[in-house]
Length: 378
Ligand SMILES: *Cc1c(COP(=O)(O)O)cnc(C)c1O
Image (tube, rainbow, N blue to C red; front, side, top):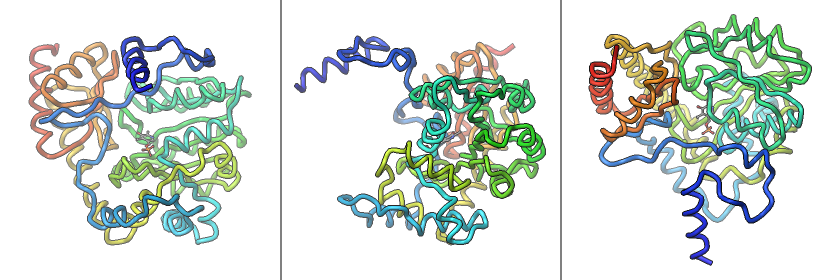
């Protein structure tokens, strides 16, 4: 049995898709699976998945260590939902209905799209944007509609609005956009919402909200009280540095979350994740985390400015990453970084996304980027 598994794994690695011994839906076979950032090499830096370079807060580590391994998390997690809801101005009761927890906000994205979009239905999103978006509708049979970004790497909200038809069931907005960096402005967001039928779900994915310093950016806290068809998504993975624990949340109308619970995988959130999130939201710990976030935003701004000064085109960077708009040179720069032990995320023929990492990584990134520009620049 063990040998068989070994053979199968080797086959799976050799060819993108192996011959299945069982029936698999053709629409599933046709699609490549989500690809994560590469594995780290030592020594070197992993700047490929927008993770938080700071060590975890001691209070969070303690909470995780004390959480039981042999138990599922208690259902509903009222204390965590109340703590999250309070940040959106909700009292306890409202929080219980309007805050939804998931094993990462990616899992909430899957729940939502599967709940609203079936065969023949459309899901509209900008492109390039979060690499998981094209996968969300595959299992339910929905169709992805990708709307190109503007030439400043922002959402083209007019074109997205025009792409909404009678069969559109969801629109996904990502602010700041991963991988390119720019935010959606509050004014543009409101204009967009006014143009969208009120029974179409709009998801505002704010995975990097905490890093935003642009005062004109849309903020889920302000908008959630205005629209019943809006779901705001946040995560503990990025600013809060809990990517490994898999916990994120959504804010929105109670009926949206009743539907999401139907399509969600039960028992996915661990007690470790629940306790860690609660500990992270304790005022003192949260303040310490948010001061790290400020340091990262400053580091990002300095990195973006330095990269521009050596000739790179870097769009408005508002997450914990910068985007180098490189077109066909993207893969070459990605390989150059990899050869030096630094993992970044190249998007072939588009650009390279570099996460803002440890302070020591910054001079290395600039050195390699400068060399590349000197040798391969124009
Ligand atoms: C990282 C990321 C997420 C979600 O991460 P989780 O770890 O699943 O919470 C969601 N959206 C975007 C745009 C991201 O970059």
